[in-house]
Amino acid sequence: MLDADDAGREAGIKFAVKLAEIGIESRVVELPAKDASEFVSQGGTLDELLEIISPQRTQSSQSEENPATDHRSPATLPDGSLMIAFDNREYRVRGLSGFGLEKLKINLRLNAGNNFHLDTLDLYQSRARTNFAQTAAKMCRVNESVINADLLVLIESLEAERLSMRKTSANEPDQGAAMTEADKQAAIAFLTDKNLCEKIVEDFRSIGLVGERSTVLTAYLGAVSRKLQEPLALLIVARSGAGKSALQDAICNFVPPEELVRVTRLTGQALFYKDPYSLQRKMLVIAEDEGAMAAVYSLRTLASDQRLSIAATRTDPNTGKLSTEHYEVFGPVVIVITTTSAEAFDEETRSRFVQLSMNESVEQTRAILATQRHQYSLPGVLEKAESEEIKRLHHHAQRLLKPLAVVNPFVEYLTYPSERLIHRREQRKYLSLINSIALLHQYQREIKTARRGEIEIEYVEVELSDIALANELAEEILGKAMDELAPPVRGMFEAIREACREKANELKIESQDVQLTRREIRETTAWSDWQVRMYCQKLVEMEYLFAVQSLNGKPSVYQLASDAESEVQTLRGLTSIDELKRKLTDATKVKSATR
Image 1 (tube, rainbow, N blue to C red):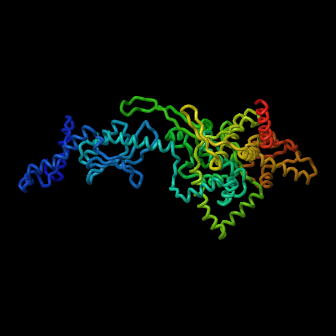
Image 2 (tube, rainbow, N blue to C red; image 1 turned 180 degrees about the horizontal axis):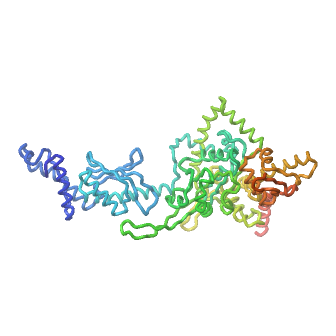
Image 3 (cartoon, one colour; image 1 turned 30 degrees about the horizontal axis):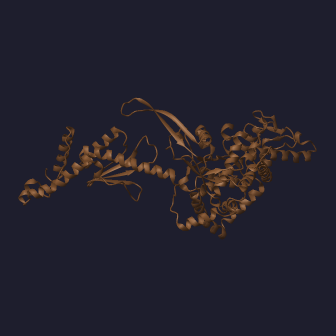
């Protein structure tokens, strides 16, 4: 009980530190006077003194028996941080995550009167707690042992808060921005529309993406598949300027921001050290394949297994010894990447993705240019303003979609080509596409419940209309994977063959006898030098072209290996709806006959 000034308070802290070193907890009590002598001379009595000291004794006793009684539950501040109060001390917590249970790293600020101390630390590390308590005791003039006791109580409170965050994240979809009742009803009306898929295509057109019906619909279904256990992965392959980035942006515009992870570049180990559930039921978007080259292995594994795992060594800060830590990242997650290269990644990686291509025809270019001009007119400006409402509608609609299981009652009657080994992987894409369509229409279906022992699942069933749409999209989108030439390379070959035929007619010779330099191909097809060089090289490797001359210092010359119409392999062997209905009828007759 020293003088009630700065010097007295400083001395009190020093005494408290010395007492704490020998295991004695103490508190500083300030009198309502300059010092004890003045308190007595002004008429201070023993009863008044006991009244000043008694509450401190009571609080100290309660804290020793049950520290939890000396603080309030965490209160959430407007900025999202947490505030926990202890007597005359307040702790503000920022950066608390519901994941990464092996550590409790936070930004912690202690406020005591007009003094404060701020630091970032892992509360699970004893040394970090000790350093924080020592520095905070000096800065805030609070007993170090009191701060250490506060930190232990903080750990219990924050662990409970974090487990609550994990439970909420696992069981409830993130609602993101507030959804009014009117927003919810509009989203439900959208999801229950009988022409839902056609409305989605129309909404893509409304935000500036014309044509490409199958491509945009498959892309949208791919985004929705993040709510399935086996989602799709999308690789958008097209020439520079064809609109692949516009398609990627359009998909991102329709996905709620809280379910979108968009990056420009990934380092080799970046995905392995993310919080375990930070990608779950989200869409990971990478701008270009160059930004993903260092992380090809992790992306391929994540797309295939929907899980990443790594064991890494680190130095224990307390013992200095090396220890092994295990990190895991869980899906499901949809991966979307764009590229201009038909040879992006290796074949093993590309086979994990559904490859989307853009319509590069002159007619499509005219339609795009007309749309661009329209956007600068008054109706176009109004449509751009309305597009924000369209995006909000899709955000709310996708938030309302539940991650249900999907059961396909027709799956035993479905077929898929089996001539090539890659079909084992391609069929999974086809089945996931069907499931995505069914999941998208969940508000138009009965949500059923199945139980087996302690297990209970909610699911929707696939309908024939889902298979009909999946067949249509698969034949156009998945069918392109059957072609040994990627779509841009195929387009280059068709352009070169047409140029050879035209020149052959002029010269009255066979088209396979026509020789074109690389410059002539550029001038005839209007393709870039990089595209001509890369794609011609691929066509030579695949024996569609012959490199007649390709020496240093001389023009590169090519001619057709053959002008015969090469049969482009397509996706054949899918069970049509008519055939499926016939199989169902036959199965029904067999069952009736056996009764």
